[in-house]
Image (tube, rainbow, N blue to C red; front, side):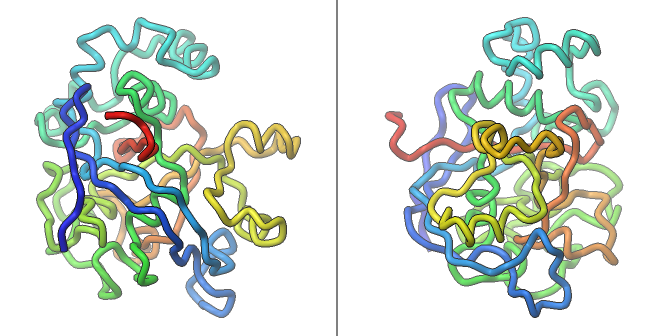
Length: 276
């Protein structure tokens, strides 16, 4: 299967086009393995978008760092700049750790704020939760990016088989329906959405089934001050076999945007209508 791809000029990141159209999001209520945030299964229509083939690597993040990305407030959200300044953050948590610093390893220990700042600098954005799921799942309703077979060490980096991140693209048999690599394992992927357990049901009840996203505007509209975490997808190198559902296309994790675990990484996206 062929895909439309290009390299983004800002950081050389290869991106793939996910065409406009519907896909199956979530899992049925009767699925015994499904958590409430994955329900219900519904048909969602997404506009076309570009998404990174790989998680952002150390090599690419170094461009942001070397060009003063941590010192320029225009790339940061107001909350992110405040967090960075108060915490005196100048680089990702794993940046100088031996074994984590290979140029083609995904940047690791990155908060949502840092991922968002990089995406702004790169002229892109973080994918919405729905965009991430479509890029991972395709249109056939598969459970994992590669299909319905259970995770194995030949498909992805998980279960501490390696014990740390591996260079991106090392598991081609685990690529998604759109040719995106490391959608499961290696590093988790931040998305732009806030986490609300019942957002899927809310979307069905209110007819928000085209380009759904729980962004700042909707969060403020809902007056949902209790919604304080961002959605994180795909699992990582430390995701245990007994937690393999985390590696699936529909399972979400949620962390405060300041979280910087060794498995926190990201990839970026942008609207297809953006002039290249």
